[in-house]
Length: 294
View 1 (cartoon, rainbow, N blue to C red):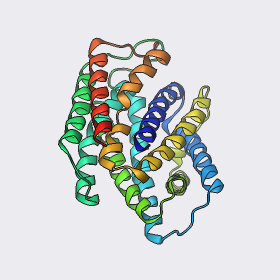
View 2 (view 1 turned 45 degrees about the vertical axis):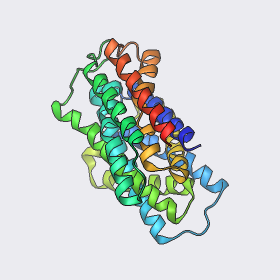
View 3 (view 1 turned 90 degrees about the vertical axis):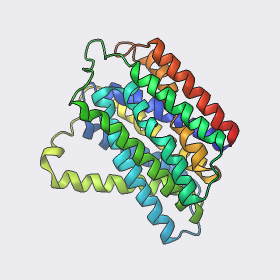
View 4 (view 1 turned 180 degrees about the vertical axis):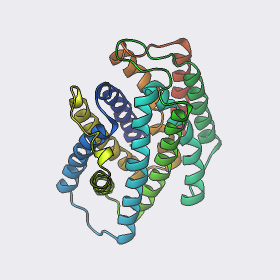
């Protein structure tokens, strides 16, 4: 089951990259965050109310809050901003390239998880596929599309920051789940923390607050929030019964699904190349290898 939940999380986050791309054609980063985050909190909060947590410890709450700040705060913001600047088919592979090694090493050092040769081989295959995907990315095309690099080369660092943040967040969440095994509460506590932090930032920064405006297409951020909430819940369910070194890299196999979703729903913005298909194939191989190892 951990592998199933990990794949569900990957599918949710991949679809999220498509919906947020549509929303960003006419809206700002802060608009996307302030619409999608509360929607995600409603999703995770509903699951929490349906099954309230018992035996909460302060240590677990601190781990969940820290995981939310690092993951939903730094990681999600960096990734969404990267999608806006360089597109989902480039941002997603760059993010996932960072994750497997960190998940393997972090799970080994902090959680005493076994790192087998198959797990290393699977992570290497995913990283190799991602490398091919990045090299095969075409420039954005079509009306309203992006330039290949909006904002300069530093934009390529944003998904790397996202990958580091998500890997660190999953390790913190895993530690919290060992204290209090309640995935839904872990998810909603982190999301609510981020919403409160953004509210404080908007209250203290008028220039940032001025960028929040509902322009045509803002409705795309509603399914973005739904997918983010479901994705985070799936991450917690996968982490509750699986090793970070197995479920983490599978969750980060998103380039494969992003390629498929982009081909179906972003034809006016991006197109497939043979390198993208080859990179996706290597990613699938890595996912299968890690699944068997688990």
